[in-house]
Image (cartoon, rainbow, N blue to C red):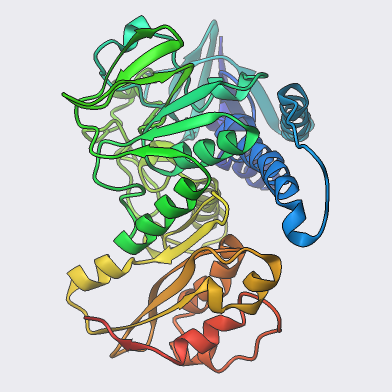
Length: 456
């Protein structure tokens, strides 16, 4: 027997439950299908658990620095069982909130199981057959496991399985030098583990400008994290301590107790039966969508990590807002209207918005750039956290801010006042002439904009 709904949402991650709420409020019947954990990556093995662990790591780090502030705390130790228990409690609480919301939502049916298309309007979910007038794919992504010689012979962790550790690795070796890798690197170093980051490329965080990458490396190295770059011939094998990783031919092997893979993610689109629905994917498996998130099939949309338009909780939620605005509000919102923005949650964090300076330079635009080190920001000095800098780049002709990077204390929050001006398409002078509160990090943004110089 086929169960029919006005809409079927596959995946209960960031975009799915919110869309279910809007659709049911509009009087539509909705089925939301989830094969694993309601809440998706963010709640279960992404933002919420990792930032909870980051907070514990920061507490340990600050405690060790107590004497710098005139506070004597004695020896500092970390109980990983308690750290994990705190993380688990927060995750379970958040998940339960979403579960209770969906289960109690009038007009919404929660279906547990793996959905596969049988035709453009129909899914088989275990023994159930569901059909829908409209279909929304919100299936997320998972860690990529690269083809590394010897990997099948050793145990390894991903961003999901490492969250289940309740004891401290003696030596955590991380393959990958981007955002997930660096957050776990600093976190576990602060918990007390020896940590080595192994990156194939010539620098960490290759998406960023070189000066940002260099500053990130300096921050991590200062905490005792070993960094190996140019590791273009990685191979692994079992070792006396757990594993032995050789970064390249002729290099000395690295002996570690645990191995974390953090080399990227891939979309969960390979077992949905997309061909049966006629839904197109690109060469990497991402579902191809237009500017309003429609797929190649008129009544099917794709939201979140599976569409290749962003790999963040905030882009997923914005996908929901775009879909809902177009379908329910007669508001033609588009993906291309949003400004790329994200953060790297090492300490101090990096907040980013818009274009990098390298991207502006490559575009050929006439531009102005301003920079201020955190050592020149009173708030950072007072807190004893002066690592990093802020940098803004402006179009010299239109006076619009093209991009910004704030690597420093509060950078993940400070970036938003810049982002808001960019979204309003206001000239940089609007922000440059705004009076901010002292003492804050944000107060130096107007000053930095008053001291712009031509970009080389």
